[in-house]
Image 1 (cartoon, helix red, strand yellow):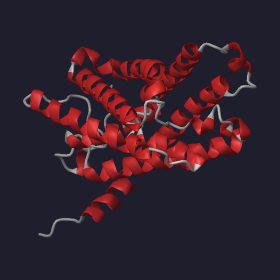
Image 2 (image 1 turned 60 degrees about the horizontal axis):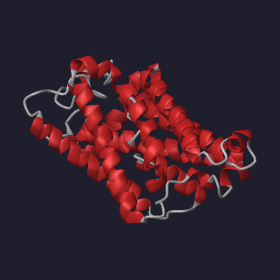
Image 3 (image 1 turned 90 degrees about the vertical axis):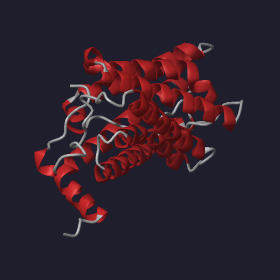
Length: 272
């Protein structure tokens, strides 16, 4: 009997899991929207908040980190997040695909949805905020290498992404931490924004960087924000497989386990 083509799998998955994909798009939209909104308030020179934070860049980054981290937590534990698993990041989707916890067709749709959500967010921010968003101090909330250059930015993005995925996988691997995975990721994101932003702009997320880049029509060093996170995620997943070969990654089955028929789904959330 002839096996269904990958295109057939894509079509079947789209029919059965379209609501999950819309959830991923909406989640990435909300994350980039909220992160860019607080970044505009902190950096636009004419805003009340920016005037209060003159000469206090670390406090400004802490506020951005707080809003971005809490946004992730809310999305992960919301009914929307529990529907799709709240990846919100192509790198996270790649990690679970590498570990066999999401089928290839679902992974493709997840990434496409995440990119679509980020692109839409960039355009909506541009339309709503106008010159506030385009001001050089805000600069479309772009993620760009710091003064040390693209090589340092690449290393920084690689390191923080590897750390994020390692924390996520270890949390999901540890029964008492599974329900805290979203909080751990939110806290880690906030910490990264405070300490790492000067080196790469703190992306972790290829879709997030692409959304801002397209809005700005500025693709400077965009390859850094694709290559570094994806390589880091691949390495983290491979090392996890080797270290925990005989121990399953409980609670991370997204859009249905890859090893059982579609009829036995529905999707499960990684931090329930």
